[in-house]
Image (tube, rainbow, N blue to C red; front, side, top):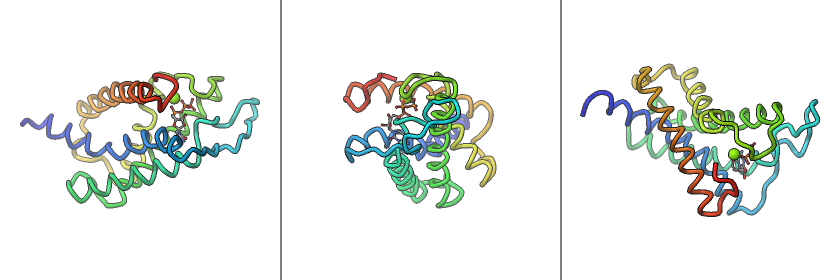
Length: 175
Ligand code: CTP
Ligand code: MG
């Protein structure tokens, strides 16, 4: 196996906690059957919700916890992470990116659930990687070609998993 694929597999393992953190809330709020908006229903200066009903405390906690736990298992099984705390950093980073994305969407006037291409698919991963690179430095796999390939894979994987969640009636929008 050549170096490109070795690094790409490392990259995919590395971002897996962020993927899990991002996907968990959709199922978790359904299972818990309760959702408390992070912004407590409050409005910003522009008379639009700060974040909207799509960002909840239950989603934030479940995403962080499940992403971190899955990441710690991967930390034990592989040597991709620099610290056992890195999966937590990656998961929190993913949640923060997703929340910032909703904040931006509300500020430009998009209602909860309306699509904002690129930000919807890549915001969480860019934020997750930013947090870990700032704290632990740039990992060996993160060459430009690998990074770009990772973003392309993430983009399509996000679209595909959201469509599957829609088919499973977990989401009412296919994106
Ligand atoms: N979710 C949550 N809490 C979070 C993130 C997500 O409860 N912190 C749940 C919500 O039920 C949300 C669903 O996961 O509807 C899908 O997430 P996402 O697509 O990010 O939210 P949207 O509803 O599309 O809202 P937005 O327009 O703000 O992105
Ligand atoms: Mg959405």
